[in-house]
Image 1 (cartoon, one colour):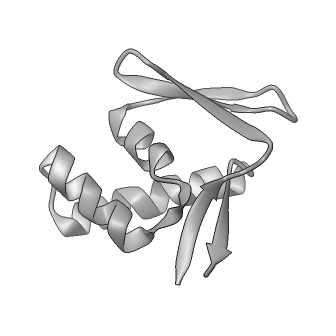
Image 2 (cartoon, rainbow, N blue to C red):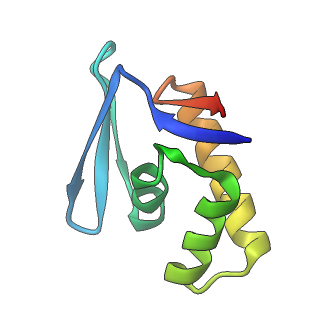
Length: 89
C-alpha cells in the first residue's frame, strides 16, 4: 500500500480559496486551487490514493473517475517537483 507525504523540502499555507505550496530548496512556489489544497492536506503519510479519491468525491461532487484522474495528475506534478513522497507501508 502506498501513502503520500509532503517532502521535507516543502511547506504549504492555506490562503483564500486554496493554498500556496513552497519548495524550500529552490524558493519556487505555486498557488493551488481548493481541490489541490484538499489533496495536499491529505498528504499526511497516512492517506492512500483510494482514501484521497473518496474525500475528493465527498467534498467536490465529482465522479470517482474524475477524482482519480485529477488526483493522479496532481500527485504526479507534486512528485515531479519533489514536493511529495510516496511511502510504501
